[in-house]
Length: 512
Ligand code: HEM
Image 1 (cartoon, rainbow, N blue to C red):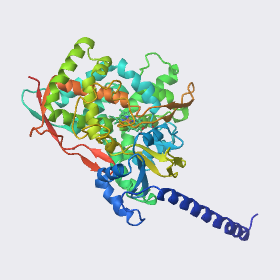
Image 2: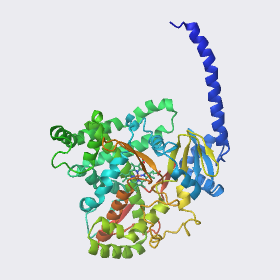
Image 3: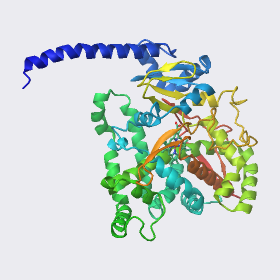
């Protein structure tokens, strides 16, 4: 038996070494960070002033760094850390090429959503964001089940925006959220659940709840977060609600699998089946599958409805694009019908969405990564493990040297640029990020790591959905702002997010 004196002596030897090691490590990290120039205050205390300024002025702060240190790295203060921002094709390409065990999107997303305190321990799953589900189930379904997507869009607009001969006011973002939720879930879980108002509201509320809770939690030190989370989030209740709503559908499929084996007759080929097939037997429960569905909705609804809203604001205040867009849609639909192939041929519409997102975008930064191992860029800059890095996306998209007359909205800017579709990220168009993310397919048949060389796995679905929604609006309604404004209502900038006006209303009237 080891006596307490030996323990104290042992600790007395080890602790100084441990403290020295931590000190050297901290010194090394700070030296690496000191070599990277700062925008704003760099001293530990004053940097808090810059961190608070960032909440409302991220565009100006990052814009200043972008122009001063273009093509290299600079750092900005956040409440609880330094954040390194890079720009220029070479640095962006370095992030794109980095492996997931060096620069991790997953860990950065965990931080942004404060996953540990919001969504929960499920984040330790290899395929936390169900990237495999999106690639194997949702992306192929776009073509095969496009008629369902179109059917849901027509039905959702008929419910939300009845075609009237008089102008009616429509609050854009909330209507967009409801329509996007219905349309996306037509593919995810099918009829009748996608139309259930409770299920639809749950998906919208869950997304808002996670994002708002995460923003509040980020203001607190780690040790307080579990307590604050209990006060500010409703998430456990939402997960319970999702399990109750999905239970009859999931349980029915689990029962059939028990009875007839994994390939039971008339098994639907949809996201639910894919999730059930790919969840390990010991975790295959209604609660787990329901949470996965919620998480996929979380990735899909907010992003797509924000992109829809900002694109639609451009459409409503630039009537000069209406006729050329209608002509394109009309002639293509006459030849190909409402199909995925038709959507792919709508180059003017594609360019219009791409230009809107270039100017309005969804954030000040993109390609957000947590550095897991010290990472050296090709210009020699080393960012220490533990830091967060991002690319200055808004500044890149709005730089005159990259996009001539960058501050002018040119809806057909991308029409003649071959192979420059909205879904294809380039080093100067990073709305969907860019990179190669490791993703894991946990089925017994394909039990290994895959490397994808792409960005958001949902972008194919999102762009098709956006095109189908906008094409439907153009062919069905006339739209305008009441004050006939010629530029979109100003967005709000909050920390790194760019949020289109949440209150704006647009007038709709059945096409005459
Ligand atoms: C306009 C709509 C959308 C935008 C702007 C968008 C944007 C993004 C961005 C910027 C990333 C990070 C990529 C990177 O940094 O390289 C991302 C990742 C992701 N997106 Fe999207 N997205 C959209 C729609 C969707 C949809 C509809 C889904 C699901 C069906 C989805 C699922 C995901 C998932 C699962 C990831 C994580 C990928 C990984 O871990 O490797 N997204 N998205």
